[in-house]
Length: 462
Ligand code: PHE
Image 1 (cartoon, rainbow, N blue to C red):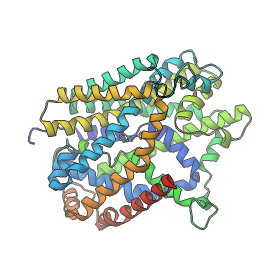
Image 2: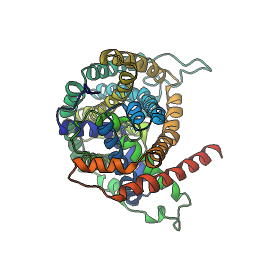
Image 3: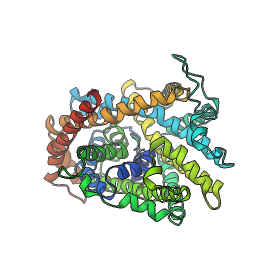
């Protein structure tokens, strides 16, 4: 316990935490979720979820990691022997994410290279799903379809890079990477946004994104599904801040004992949201441009997720007035950098849990985890990959996150002395948190999550 590795500086720790938080979720998930759920009005449930769940849980997880100084299973078991399984459950969820997250980073590397000659041509959609890239038609009953070798190569690179960074440890690996990658990420994003907002039609796109539709988020409004908007806000906050995934506990377990955590939680949360807004502006300005070129309405061209990054964006890049290739490379590089720092945090979680439990060396744990993770991720580069992707994504986002968050809050809120964590955090922070925090952790957020769990089950099985 005494020999635990440590961050070299508080800045290093905060940048690593922000690196985990900022990822694909900010660039392709947030803009669309906001747009679909009331545009500007979505910010109300979003900030509500940030203040009631996001920040309080970050403070909680940072506090637990800092004081218990162990991977998630070890930290939970130090709180109470009976809690260890929750750490493993969260570690397992994280591991589930990395198997396909790594594949999306690999695709982004492919597309970064395609950008050099706009290889997707005039039909980016057919290119992406067809036999040139995903090869979805290569499915035949239980035959998964072969491995797509053009994705195999970048995938190997991703896993090799993950191995190299994680095996170097906290200070020399993760911290160093974050100190370099995070400023680069911000610069890349700023360049993209500055270019995007001057494109013809950009304002139209931003109008669509930000025009508040208050009617949409309240029970007495026009949207009978208004509850879904609030669920979407909570889901976005959990996924985006990487909370209830064992990650923030693990990262803070490498903090020196006397380091502040309350302020760090606020800084992490607001940087993450800030980056999401920046990305949303860039993405919607670009979508406005696309609608403008096609002479159609923004609502007809706005899409999310895979379609946004690998179909809409290639098309936008092709239609750019100048320097298409350059901006193509820039956009996909941004995805790679943002995704990679999140992927790093996931591998660290698993490695750290295994090291603590089995007392093996970092090198050995990392090698095994990366090898197993790599082999599982191969499923997602076969012709049926997208099918498994949907199942896993749905499982983690609809059930995994909320259940994990709910269990964490109930166990830590009601079965140990929660106030002790608050007092310990306050001892090392100039920013003192008050009793409001206990109320969020014990009452407000669990109730919201319970409602979400019930609604999700109802949706799934009705
Ligand atoms: N927070 C990351 C994102 O927004 C995703 C992530 C989730 C990373 C869970 C680690 C764990 O993309």
